[in-house]
Length: 118
Image (cartoon, rainbow, N blue to C red):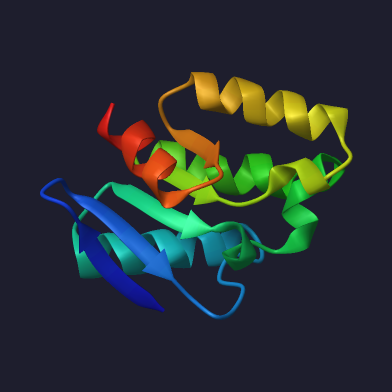
């Protein structure tokens, strides 16, 4: 896992070649690792770092794991192509999430930075 600071703000960009968030416990482990190593509450990751099962809302994984980010006062931007998921409930979740202030689903790193800097 590669962690780097972006711009002058305290945004952390995490890159990894493997799935880092597989379940609620791995989400907690990820939070603790990034928080400890980078000392930041604003994180950007790629969709590929999250297990595919998360994007099936019926599993409950997405809500459970993302609640941990909110509980620990972290802001997360996820870069990916979410149009590939044919789920109205996921699309609604993404729309509502993007209206909030904690979890964002975006297409580019620039959009991620903009959401976290707002």
